Length: 450
Image 1 (cartoon, helix red, strand yellow):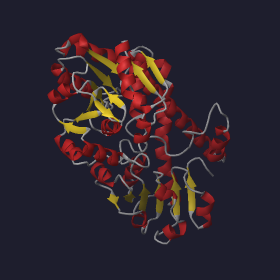
Image 2 (cartoon, one colour; image 1 turned 180 degrees about the vertical axis):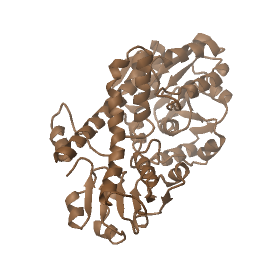
Image 3 (cartoon, one colour; image 1 turned 90 degrees about the vertical axis):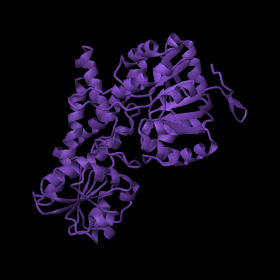
Image 4 (cartoon, one colour; image 1 turned 135 degrees about the vertical axis):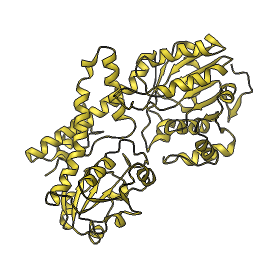
């Protein structure tokens, strides 16, 4: 291994050809970044239209810096795309599985059917030594099951090995997190698998590497997300208390952040977390713990989830209070549709959740987002959409800032005030200077602040 001619980038031989199976958010990023490091990469997806777009250098997602990497490596010839598992099997020495594991429709558990489908489609074509590497977030125990399935279904049998290499990407910073990671975790069953992955990630330079077993590697990502979700919900629980006590959660958070044991990251009170990772991952974590008979250990995550969802309700309550207790016949502007800035991802978006809830209470809701409008229109056709913040705010009786895009943080309160029907504002992300907006005549409310 390998049985093909090595490609060379500068003075360094690149001894493996890579495939990336699944070209969604994770897969498209991983494929382009590995090609940028000098590898020959073949991306695979069963969605023919997505593959055609990628071949043209068009991204199906919004991610800063990624489209340039995609186009550059397509032009260099290091990156190609296919819909054929047979082609991928014959091409690759190392196969990265990057498909999603969404929450099942009727419960909290993770749906790992996409993983099984990839393994079942790839394995029958694996007739030589290779390494299959899972990067998806999975319930602990999944890796060993898939390792056994690979050996059982592959013509090469024991010469096909599995490793687990969880991803730690932040949407909006995915290229940076791939090319300059803060750590790499390798869940391996042999020294051979460890060596291959050290070679693959060698071009990244000096990065802390943790070599461990399958279960620990699987738990790292879910444990990290559970910790972050807990920290976010903790400060949002403090925001609930601050509202009843007349305290300021921003000053409370600032005071806590000086304690090096706590730190300030993920300690910003507001509308809470959303997206395709934290909500479904903590729920899947709880579900798997229940299956293993250790449900009590993660019981606290139920309250973490509940606190997070309560913040969405409270944001709507603040807006209704500013309108005298009713949304009926009122025009409401929502700034933000993506679950976070620098992304077009609307999965479990707190902003859209609040917007839809307000519309159900009788308001005419207009949304603006710099990147996520197309996705939002598909998910919520009952809402109205605008092409700019000022257009969305025209004749509005209340404005809610629910995704902290820099474009919104930089808004001029006088310019916005000139187009609204009433200067009422809910800052759902605690992103604005309250004094500046109040001095401009706005009735300013925020989560966890007087």
